[in-house]
Figure 1 (tube, each protein chain N blue to C red):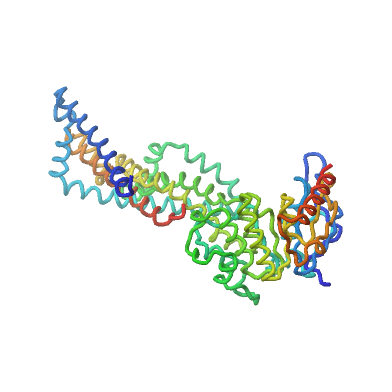
Figure 2: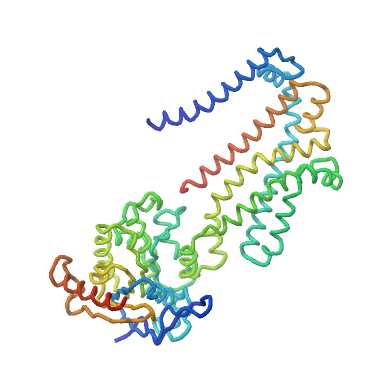
Length: 251
Length: 257
């Protein structure tokens, strides 16, 4: 099979899979005669997106801001802390267990505290998205910075490379596959974090819209909000994949 | 005669569970500048350990070591020593050219007054012209090892330490690289210390072959081949080479006993 055909097939099969499930969804609704206010058909969702497009976009904007801010902050902090841990065994011994402990707190339990402290604006949502992104990247980057082989470190030693040079010329490039693995995970969890935050206390954003739509029995809008947030996650994920392709040509 | 490397009653011990484990002790050895010496010995005789001490990758427990009359640490900082590992240790995110230039980017090279080689010329020397922009994963194992040799040479060290550099390669590639390494040695006049576990390789490359023994580790015999191999050249299929190899094999057998 030639390359072009391969790329073509790589698109065709997942699309066929998605279409088959949509058809199944639609069949279930028609065959069991499910009422519109219980569950809409795929077409009903599409209609709801069209009808409430500006409302959806208006609410997507704060969610986007929160998710992207949290994504950047959480990953940024995690990388900085991992750098500190890799260069100081003491720091790692002191604070890594605390990071693990902190990670065991369910984010849903943390959200009310953050809202209590930071108010009802975007700040607590950004904080939740940040926290949710922090841990996976911390763990991955600690591993990533240590992923260089003994030979590679010895090579740097023979060349009398400084710690800084070892970091930038060896540890950092070595850690990139680990970073991107984590960025792929956190690009979607950041959106979840933002929505969870909005869910608990907000008047705007996709999370708030989901709550409002549920209480008002606007099931079409509820589904539409879910689709929009999921499409946004997908977009973030795709951006990370593109960046990975660019930076990891060698991998 | 000036010595590039002087080793006097060198000993290395590793901390063991109960008693320290001795890699070797009281090892003395001098390498003439521009000489090609191979080291062969049973596994565990400390041949790689010796190389690592010279490269300042390991502190000796006893004894003195001098490289160009200086301690290994100073020699390392001066870039007097180049090292080639068994695995090529090419950095996969760097092209061939970028890999070769790595030593010129770190360790204060820009401030040193040492005269390095032109990377392009080195690439030609190891026979990789035209592959400057290739990434290591696009190269064969033998080609990657040639990149590693060029990288070890680029800072123009006086001494080249090679730790079983061709050990993972097939025999045809290995023979070809041996010939190429001898050409490089003749061209550059480096002092080469080459560890191998192949008798043929030790016999073919070395002007001098050091046979090491284990338990206790140390030098068992030094076999001088300069008379049998004028200009360090020999045909692998000639009777002379066969007799050198047999002699080495016998010595190695006794050393392993």
